[in-house]
Length: 338
Image (cartoon, rainbow, N blue to C red; front, top):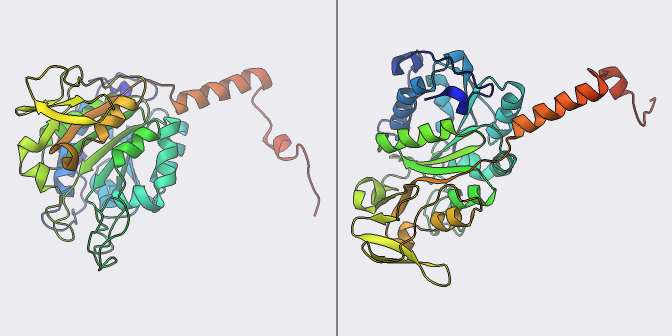
């Protein structure tokens, strides 16, 4: 695999490393049985495929259980501010195009206090890979409901059940015009690695939702996918959307219906559709609607990357106005003496 997807300067000089090279000397401190262990293992196992030196890779996190991730990666990293990881990573990405920048966040960190930063990073198409660990709960602060918790969820903060309608993270990302949107689950290392690979190869914002089990505060949240493989609908570009003996066909009003897999007119997946309508429709195919959960790459399209646009604008300004005068800029326009 080329490193060009995550490396802004397109450097194709590959470095041979192993998963062990990406394991730091820090003790991994999550609750025993936490799904984060499986995700960490998958990411460390995948990193050598980038073919980059470890100092060319950066993990930025916010606050939460998932945010400990940078401590366990033998790369550069930053445990940053609650919900602000996309903003901090944006500054890093545009100022250092030679780096492969990854954001690790949780459903509370990214969908609540960080929701604004997330959608703007996605709409701008900053060259970031955003991994959102979704366990439908606040784990670090001991079990309050989160923006992805289901309606009626009973927690310490909602003893009579949550009244909030939950976010669909993929619908949110697609609605924000993200150019790459995917979903995986912590225990399916093969498919998770395939999604990570596709995200790394994509130039621009890549948003990956990873179903992650919190066995302490929200155990079994995704057992309908984890334990019952027949409920996983794997999306494959250019192929009909089927799982087992079932398939999906659209009614005239655009709503989905489940039909036998051999039926005519099955919906065919097009991850590269320029308009987001197809991917958005797929994001609405939930366990409750069709009895299966789509996994894999929902959307993967090309669009000008924010980092490149900024670099071009800076070069244009230099060619037209020279290197610039900071003091002159600060004293230009309306000024006041106090």
